[in-house]
Length: 364
Image (tube, rainbow, N blue to C red; front, side, top):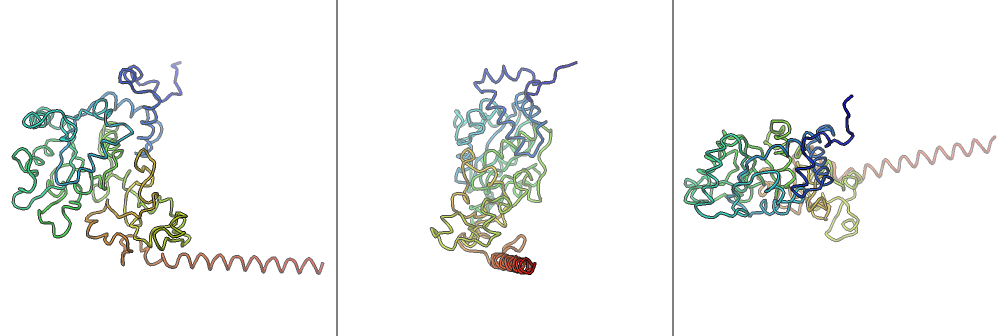
C-alpha cells in the first residue's frame, strides 16, 4: 500500500529542496499556500496543488504605470505575504517595472519589448494608473510613445491584463469631473483585451498574487462580477463582513468624531461610511500584514473600489441621500428604535408572565 502523508505538501516533488535553496522555510510557505486557498475560497485539498503550481512555473510579468500616484507600486513594495523580494525572485519573473527594475532608458524599453515579442500569450500585464485618450493620448507618454499605444501592444499580446487600483480599473481620480485628459480605465481603453479589475486606493497586493495563483493552479482566471472584478475579492459588500456591523444592527452610531461611540468602536454610517454600497474584501484581508483597515482604525469607507467614486461617493464625511444597494438608508434611523421597542416588549411580556406565575404560586 502506498503511504499517504498527512502533510499536504509531502507529495509535491522536490518542494522542500527548492524551498531551502531559496531560503524560504517550509512553515512560511505552507502558511502562504493555506492563506491563498482561503482567500480564493478553495478547499484544503488544493493546498498542495497551489504549492506545486507556484513552484513549477515562473510566469513572466510586466508592470505598466500611467496616470496615478504610485500607490499601487507602494502597496506591492510593502507586500508581506510574500515579500516583494520573493515575488520578484521566486514566484514571478518581473521583467519590467519602472520603480524596481535595474535597466533604464532604451535598455528598459528593450526589456519590455523582449517579453512582448518572445513570450506572446505567455505573460501577464499589470497596469497601474488611468489611460488618457484625449488629444491622441499626449497627456501620458513614455519613451516617446503614448500610454494608449503601449497598452494596446503590450496588453494585446498578454494572456491576461490585471488592472490594479481604481485609476486603472475605472479611471479613478484622473477621470474625476471634468476629466480634462479624457482618462479611462484599461478595459474601456482596450475593449478587446482580457482584463481582470482589482480596484482600490491602493490595490491590496494579496489580491494580485491570488489572481495569478488562481490561474496557475486552475488554468483559468477567477470568476468575475459584471465589472470584471474577481468574486473571491469583490463578491461581498464591506458592510457584510465589517466588525462594526453589530453596532449598525443595534442602532449604535458615531455622531461626532471622538465622541463616546467613536471611542467604543460603534458604526460609522452616520459619519459617511460607504461600506453598505462598496464591494471589497478589506475587512477580511486587511492591510499591513493583516493588522488593520480604515474602518477598524476609525475612519469610514469612502467607496474607493467602486466606479467613479470621487464623484459619486462625495462628500466622504456625510451620508448619501440615496445610497445604491439594498436601501439601508431607509432603515438605518429606525433599526435602533425598532430593536429597542422589541426589547421593551419582550421584557414586558416576561414581566407579565412572571407576575402571573407568582400569583398562581400564592393561591396554591
